[in-house]
Image (cartoon, rainbow, N blue to C red; front, top):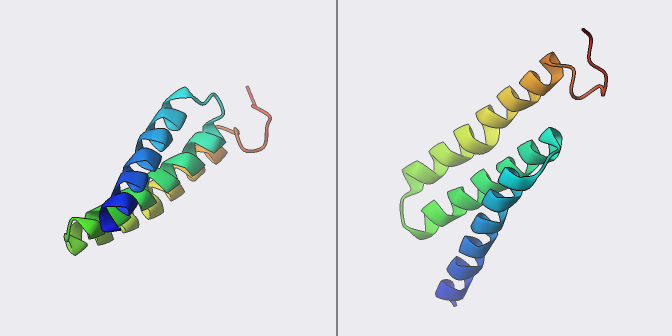
Length: 84
């Protein structure tokens, strides 16, 4: 049963990687990247590496996402208008 869950997680991981690469909307790309980091944290847990899982969850899904959202706000992408 564990192997089936791991295969499903790997499929979702590849799907998230492709979605981040192919999407045109930056906001959607950040959301999908958060999902990618969360899935990667679970995979690290399955590989019995909890220290990497905690780091991936904190940095990948947490800090990186906040920095990406702040960057999108700074370039006025989240408002939908750009000041020039």
